[in-house]
Length: 238
Image (cartoon, rainbow, N blue to C red; front, side, top):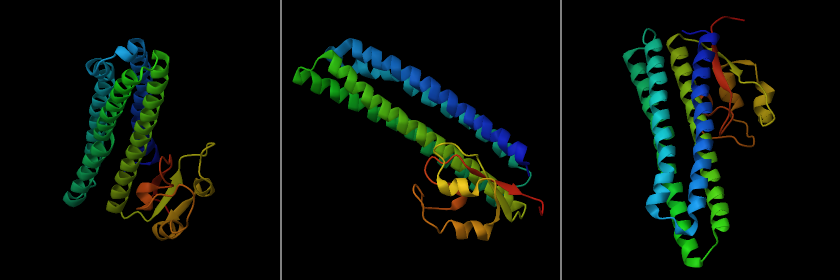
């Protein structure tokens, strides 16, 4: 089983891909905004689609990067997983790809079509180019925020699933809740950050209610939507 440093290294790899995606996404969206804004109400559907294409290409590239990281994770876990749990891990990988990158591509298509509709309606209503730029920026920023949150949440959920599977294989009974405290940390997460608990204690604590709590396995959903915390198996009797 990988130690805490090993798990954190994997977490950093995933976080790096997410940060790069977010950074490039913002740049590409700004470029698309400028392109559509410059065209104004004369923009055609084809031109709006062309403006969005680099964003779609970025999503596909990110998918490939995640595939490589996840394939490496599968290889690392190969010596401790039974055939059954290996299949569970493979299923978790497939779910991750479906719930992140595939959803992102769908989201991009949806946002693109929303902007196309806005362009057509603006043309019909005789809106000015300034009004159109303002509207498309609002739509695109909202879409980018949803994409980023979806990606970050799903990747962390996958990593937690991996940790739980590997800990089960090694009969680990205690886990440490880590992730640190920032301004937006939920009070519940802040109260247990750094703490070590048994599986039963964790299950008991997650019967409580708090703002932002998500339904499901506490090892997967953790503090809730977009939670930055994760579980580390504790092998010793400390």
